[in-house]
Image 1: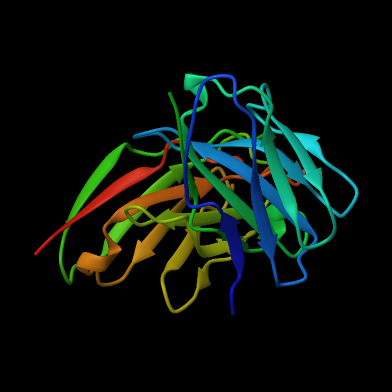
Image 2: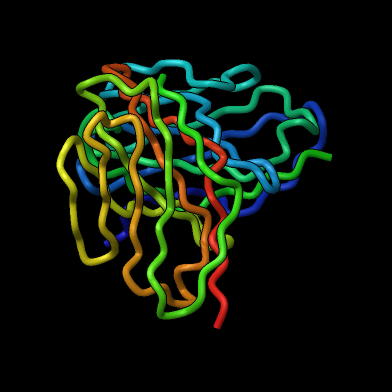
Length: 114
Length: 110
């Protein structure tokens, strides 16, 4: 069972470059989430998708865009990367709206912007 | 979103019980209380959740105060593998958002 798969695992970008972080889940979950975690800090919600076709802003959405491509996939795009976006990014999914069910997390994408 | 308050860090000896507290005084009546933990260099993993009653599973127990303004995660016998950051999530109403706080870093000493 793959669970939640994130690609890539590591990435170095130059300031101003763009990239898309990919996330896919194979558990037929409705809800998906993107978080960032800065060193020594807790997780902060960037965007989430309660169901296919819907997305909503989280705590720190500025500088990011998301696409819920289908039920399985939820991508996070950085249009013009900045050093402040250096972080570890986690994707998660849950069967229903997160607070009522268990969420499963990917292993993270470690992004460095130089 | 309900705000949660947890101690920054706690220590325990191996094989002893650990009680991790969480305050969630603004929780609404329909919000579940979730606990997750994050081992070093890994993504968070689910531990337990509950609404009003105390809950048990193979990993831990969750004791919820009668007024639901606080809860305690209980690890019955701490092992070195339980050293992690433990996050309490006190509910987000109907928004569906999972909002993490700063968590409690648990150190387990052999």
